[in-house]
Image 1 (cartoon, helix red, strand yellow):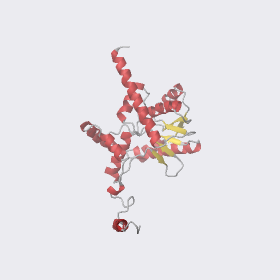
Image 2: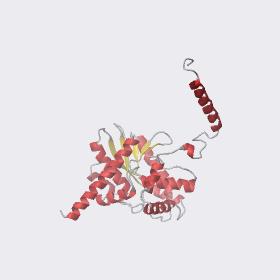
Image 3: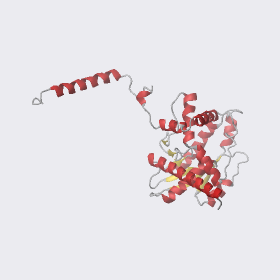
Image 4: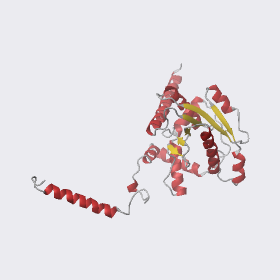
Length: 287
């Protein structure tokens, strides 16, 4: 083997170890997967979900707990969608899988005006189909392929366009309390995932619904964040860590922190402090 190939293999091994470490740490920190879980890996055909599945398979085979994996794809009936790609790939790696066939594409195209963003309604329809399958088939965890950069982008989208400090949590209980969603790639950066997917030569399937819309708000946010990262390497990691280290008293949400009664708290604290001082000043025998 040439020196160049040796170096390339060494770099790939480092990349794989880093991604596995990222996923393992996220799973441990948020208690994502437990013994006996049946994990539904939502596979879109993109680099993120392929990488997630690959790492979860390795974890399943080496973890000290037992859990099942089933790969599930929602065939949204997009024109030209290569229906054979995912079944052939999943069969080749011997992973149980199921294809949900539901024509959400026609619904999206009918409801959303030409040129407008389709991601919102597409996501809701897709989520409803996947949640329904999970409930009906004994799934205990739904694994989505969102990574660190997705989480940060969502944070800024909600800040800039929704006036909320809100992102994607690594672990989530659905609104109807029937499904638990996990994001094992929460600590992994998109650049690492892209390099890994390319090295693994996953059969990537492009999304013809949202992938062709170049002026999405999310794309603008992505470009802004990537510019920040180029100017100041490590900035995205700091932003992600900040959403893990929140101080409600230093923000302005009256539902998260009791600003109204600070005066009362100050008075109570003063009374406790004065009582303590008085007690300490009493003669030793009196105490």
